[in-house]
Image 1: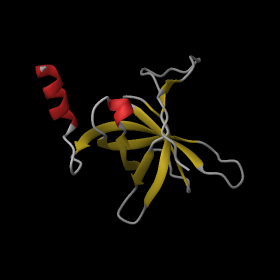
Image 2: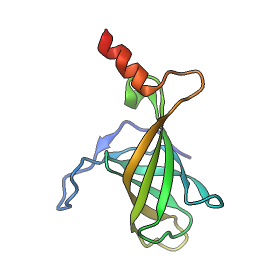
Image 3: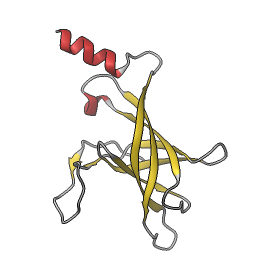
Amino acid sequence: MLSESTPRMQPASDERRMMRRFDMRLPAIVRLDQENEFHTETQNVSARGVFFYLDKSVPAGTRCEVTLTFPPHITLTDAVRVRFTARVIRVESPLPSSRIGTAALIEDYEFLRSTGSSDFLGALSREAAN
């Protein structure tokens, strides 16, 4: 079952990441091409990357599209749907019969309008005006 949890920062390590990662298990759709779309969940998200699980291995360098929704308890406004254009930079070898961890570098993103709720940029503008 997918769970939404309050984001937690990953502990410090010897890694060379530029941006903080936040543990966020969010439902996601990963599209590799017209025939390959996977419903999955994220493990963690940062401003420059996302880590998720797939049922098949994808070579490093593969371009993908990741769509997810940040819930209200994270955005502090309405739920916000975001689509990332990303490139796979690391694939973790799975244990037998487990899903494959996939790290992708976010190259571009766009906010998607959700029916019945305001868009994220509009909510920011309204908040700034108050």
